[in-house]
Length: 376
Ligand SMILES: *Cc1c(COP(=O)(O)O)cnc(C)c1O
Image 1 (spheres, helix red, strand yellow):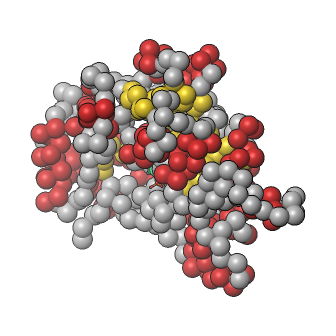
Image 2: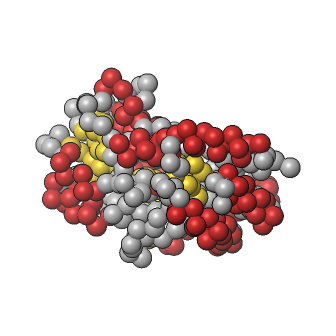
Image 3: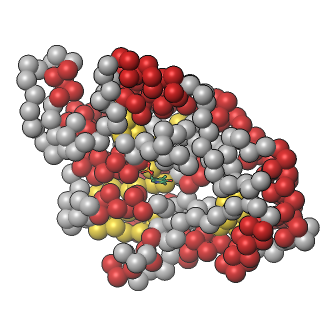
């Protein structure tokens, strides 16, 4: 009995809805299930317009197209994030300016933002790490002051809030992921949220390969053609049907994940007394959505030993991002600033198994094994 790091949860309705989608006879994108999923995000999370995509990566690439990012533009991105957060803008020729994390949280340090802004800066991409909100008031105020766009990479941020506002509804644009490692899944999948009205019209065109096909199908125009840049960003109805089965169960999925998270937090809290060991902190005005649970170890070496120790106990624990400013692709392009907090999380953060079907007995085994390692 091995405990994996993640196990995709199936609600049981996925196959029924896929069958239904197939029987409806229209399995390409932008059909019945796509609209159901999009409407859910718009009405539940106050996103002005939601478009399903084949991944969060694709949604980020759509965002870069929508903002007309071009060579010479600068985009500020946290170094401690997934590759796609930066890569989507590099594809359009942008120069990435990496920002460090906070000392107390892997999220970007908003107090370091203003110093990185200059006349070439076009956008700030914020990542709500572990589903915990960045300091959005400060970030949005800076974006107004300097006329910048804010994109929320809310890949991990579904059903989480900042001062009561749903993540993904605050920035000009936002992106979500339904990759099998996230809370709500469709294998691969994502969503672009559009909150700024200026982007409503073009978003649909970029989504539909640069054509005005969506308007055509609504009967607004009598023929459709190539009107802008775009690509094939929309998923088929088969994927949307799968996703709908998950969305229908979002409340039970979220409450089970949060229950597991809370138990880790309560039963491992005493580790904070050990020198340089930290548990996740929830900054003021933010919520936890049970996306992931982590420990900060004292050193890289200690983390490696803990991973090995847990492996012998049949528990698969994993580290997370490696600072992008120091990656093989970017190293040469990075200015010389050191980003020590990002490096700290790269070296010392460890994620414990967290998935819907993790049993109480399995979680007890994980907690007692971690305690055993630390001799407490
Ligand atoms: C998972 C993730 C992505 C990528 O999502 P895909 O749907 O796999 O493209 C991007 N950014 C962050 C912060 C993520 O966690």
